[in-house]
Length: 236
Image 1 (cartoon, rainbow, N blue to C red):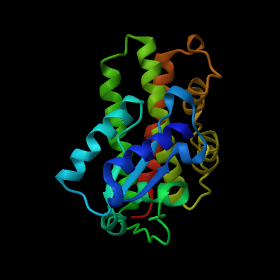
Image 2: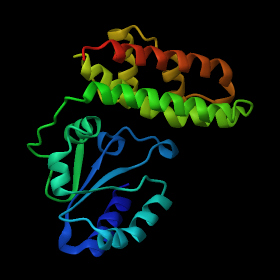
Image 3: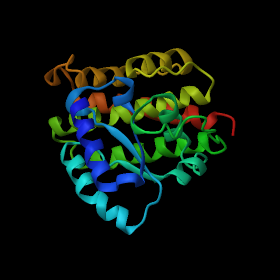
Image 4: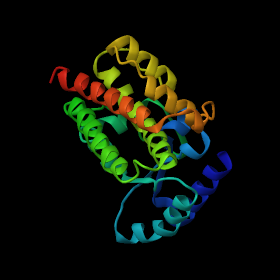
């Protein structure tokens, strides 16, 4: 992982020179909760200015990074980092709490996060991801392997959102996904059985053949819906 990140930084430096203010790793890569094919590396690239020229310079680097199985870096100007925390409270909380500076300054140091729309963003993301999960599942319900892959791919995102639901409700919000599920059980009474089974699949502890995709999906949807209901009831 470190070798790949060093290559990314070198390519970004070559592409942007002195305009490159900072490169920051965040998400599961920064928290150490990485599990092979199911995990990717999230990186924020901060420039002094961003225009068509900078986007053109970024294109080959971003293409290379995506070919390595990672999402394109989050490209922002320094001014955007300082003024947009009210729009992206989920992302800013994650970055501020757990990140690793790969190059340049720590642009998140001392950053004040505006939580005015925090609850609404968590609910919006939960509902949007749930709708998307249903849409995708409708096309692969008869294929057990694709169904298991779909659920295993999605559970990490729902664990992240569950962690933010815990934060919103004033509960302890650990980073490891297994601990998040355990805390859901304790704080909200959400059993999290499907979450645990899917995490086991991601971690290689559960064999795919031991799972019934149809039953697992039904339980998974129920647990996600329960989480949505919890966030919906939180004080606005």
